[in-house]
Image (cartoon, rainbow, N blue to C red):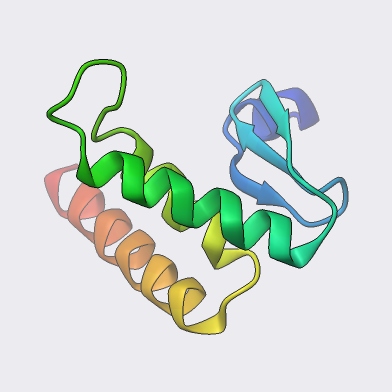
Length: 93
């Protein structure tokens, strides 16, 4: 796999640049830990109110991804979900 293909498939928080990566899209995160935790919690709260206009359920996974960068408990949950998803996709193929 070429380096460009590997970067295009990247999803999550890049620990080197502290940017949220969605394939080729990059979104900078706050430098402070409190700022990242606050951003993650706000996204989760907005996701819970996803039935309202503008807010959406898409905010929930984004908030959890941001929180997983700083909180070990959330990181473990994210890794478990990622492994479950990979195994599920592998069984279908």
